[in-house]
Image 1 (cartoon, one colour):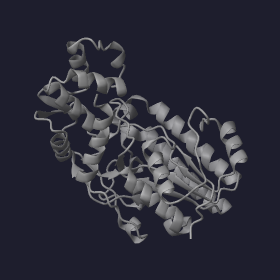
Image 2 (cartoon, helix red, strand yellow):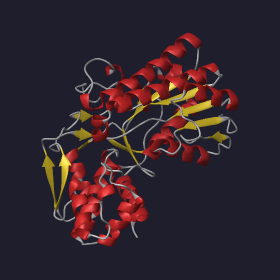
Image 3 (cartoon, one colour):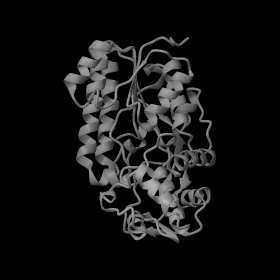
Length: 356
């Protein structure tokens, strides 16, 4: 039986995945959870990380802290993504070993797989060919953390496990258009286009005040001018009668609700060891969707009446990212939240926090 009084450190508890794990642990009756915000503890700082582990001595760690973002941010800031994620992974994993952490879960990403990996992507496809260039820095940092966990298990007998989730969305998602992942970026673009189509400028003002657009656009918006607001929305692809999406819609993606991922992580920490899992395991449903179909689904859920245009001059990213679910199913876990249900819940949560 799991020890519900074990001291558990959730690194990155304010992020999409970390907050979902925190909710799942609390729901499961765990009563000795510790967290630190980035202002309290900078995990890029090795000395600060070591001091934290020495003082707190957590028994379990969920390593969810990371610099994350979508294709736009990864393309624009590759040095930031590789440096920050390498440092966070290295510092936390090493400190966990040094200070006697009994079990650690390292959160990876489907970006670790080669750009043209056979579909669906099995765990043994890692490092078999070239990575996707638009997120190579982030992917390399995540691969390094997987290998570090395996090496520490091999040399020191630690019980550090790594999981590779598919694309996530859910409560607490990031809707900044510059740094958001696929689904929240798409939801917000259609949402803003709908508000523009309806001439709901008060709602647009409320949206922009509560959630920045990014790309430096917010600094130049004149909130007293409807024309200025419309110009800012056009700059991120939201128009009165259409939205503009990157690529041509031909890529395929799998999406999973963060509550499902959190459930899988806690299940593995409670029931499985590094020996059971091996180097890492995919957290996936094993099904995907054509991006053009996803955009249609989002348009219908948001209620936007316009059409979709594609900017084929922009990259599609990896053509397909479908992960194989055989291993995680063999370990006894299955997801519960369907895509349509999850997207509706995510949009309701976003709409409720931005409606004036």
